[in-house]
Image 1: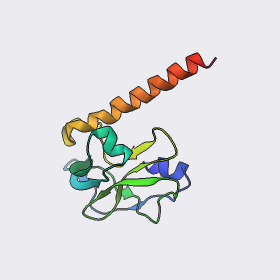
Image 2: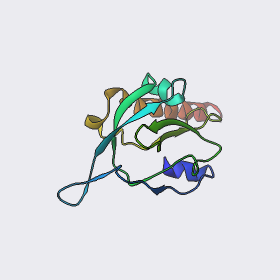
Image 3: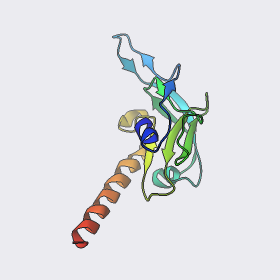
Image 4: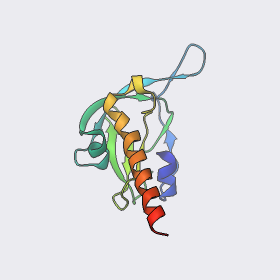
Length: 134
């Protein structure tokens, strides 16, 4: 999500305290917090609902409104500190970036698997369109 923001002209992320936990071995462990997903956003459409949800957090940097690209919409926020947890483009069919780690499946609700399913579906559509455009 942070790279997506920069690619769209946003500013570099800033240090965010308490979004990652240092484990006993010195490595990063998941912390957890609640986010609010905006109803009507593309993220809400993909995962099947907006509203409040608990997600993992393994990052020490984040984006606030001051760093956000004006070309992107914030579609999810951390309830604890207002850090942006998801960005998306309203000008593109499928550009969504999330701050939490949906690939850590046991740490997020199961409906976040739909992010990967949706990405694969869009990729397949683009491949099919490319085949028939030549």
